[in-house]
Image 1 (tube, rainbow, N blue to C red):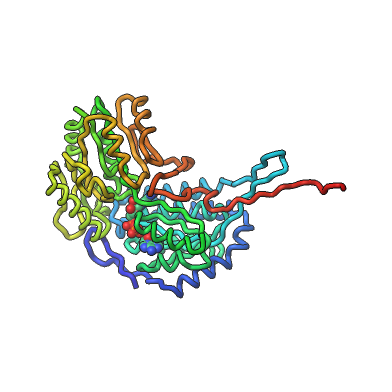
Image 2 (cartoon, rainbow, N blue to C red):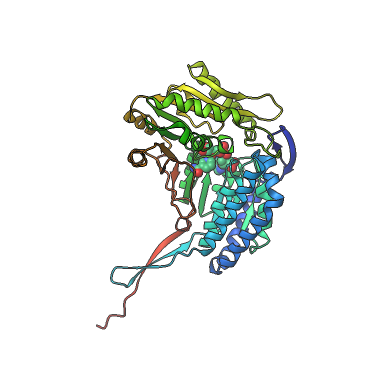
Length: 445
Ligand code: NAD
């Protein structure tokens, strides 16, 4: 069995099955068996039923998500609401054949077969459904493996969803790694849809290469935010702050480093620190909590180490830091006078510590922001929206916002860039392979 821990107390909540190779074989066999009938079904009703299940599950499972992940209850509820909306959105989508050329060439899409879906621990419900909804809409079956840090909610939700789906269409497997490795390398898996860190993503890509499996990777980011000269801190500070610290800083596409240019610098540091000091950090079950604990011991220690290393290299810890236990509580930390010689600037912290780098020019800020191998998402903050958009186009990111960050409507593409993304995530096309039919009347000769 695999123990599930409450990050607010450091205590074990319960245990879930620790699946092994035999369980992977059984789940993939069921997914292979269910696929022919599932791909031939009109899946609209099934996806709408999934939306209802997720909506109704929230009352029971949002508290479970808070218990194992740490986030405040209203954020856990928001995950369920977003997930239900995603099932509804994909229930309506179809990939219609295209007709090209002289009108006799048709481009169709066919589903791929069993998909291995693998999720991290920051947004367990939202990210699971971001994989399930397009995979089901395309006609694929899924074996879903949540993070060993947050297996419980996904396991319960998977059982509820399985009741409105044909047998074998969805199996959730919980367990310690190497479970993920067994799953992605199973010969019955035709596509891997993975969200997690860059190093694990590279291992997954290597496993996929052996059989040239279709692959979607959504990987770590080190999202830069650039604050242009002349920006009024009072106008942007709150939105910028929560773009970095939502979900206790544990969001792949969040702001991970700030570059503030010229005289804007001191005002930004001051405004972000003032907001950080007011945040109510505590148990996610307690009403009024705005930020829960860091999800697990290893991330808690890593965030502590990164903040300490930055301080030792000259950063000024304006506010925040590790709080006394029990539980993995960490007050949101603002690190002023940060620079790219610090690991907290060069590496993704994925936690509640925000480095703010002082820059003299826009070119310097853009150069530093782009000097990073991940390229998921970034943002530019400016009183002048037009100027902000010009700088946004220079950032090497898949998505760049001007005066916001994190907003992703369901119909917006999510391309990613550099080492943050591969394979087009979250859409039906990425869950299919196209094929072409040329139609001609028989030649009379
Ligand atoms: P991780 O890479 O350690 O683990 C992710 C998942 O992969 C887990 O379920 C894990 O059990 C599994 N896994 C581990 N080894 C595997 C293997 N060899 N084969 C297959 N699966 C394996 O990442 P994490 O610590 O759980 O999550 C944090 C990371 O996720 C951060 O880097 C964050 O930026 C990233 N993330 C990215 C996005 C995005 O949209 N790009 C969204 C959320 C999180």
